[in-house]
Image (cartoon, rainbow, N blue to C red; front, side, top):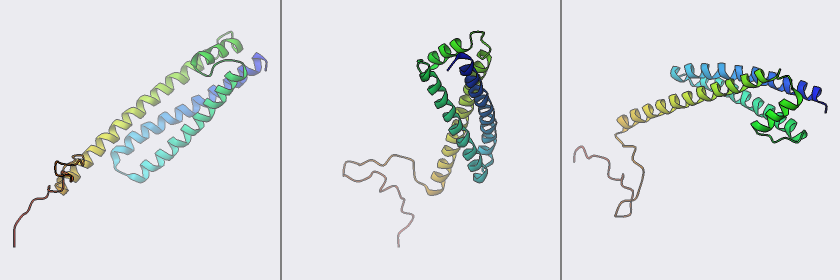
Length: 160
């Protein structure tokens, strides 16, 4: 493959990746709002759409790795940069590559934030369940007599 064809292929991959990362970013922002809403159906829809975008991004990543390997470069960031320098000596694709990296980092940050929101919500639900059931969230471990320590956690409220 000559450098011109390689540059065209890489430009196409980067363009597709930018579109998918933009859509993923929007979905992650929507997911943040959905987590707080308490509507499981809406969360399932955004989760399914997010997974679809992640699958498409993985396919693009695989094509980019294959392009690097085809031209004798490693499939990591350094190999991609060497490939870009070979097929794009003027640096026309460098801004697209930088945009992909920036968008990917933003998506990672949004995903981390959403993960923290989900963990906080799960903790709150766990605390409410503990308050309702009267059970603690202790790990089930064996006591000195060989049985689980939480066997005797119930209180006797009265006798007959």
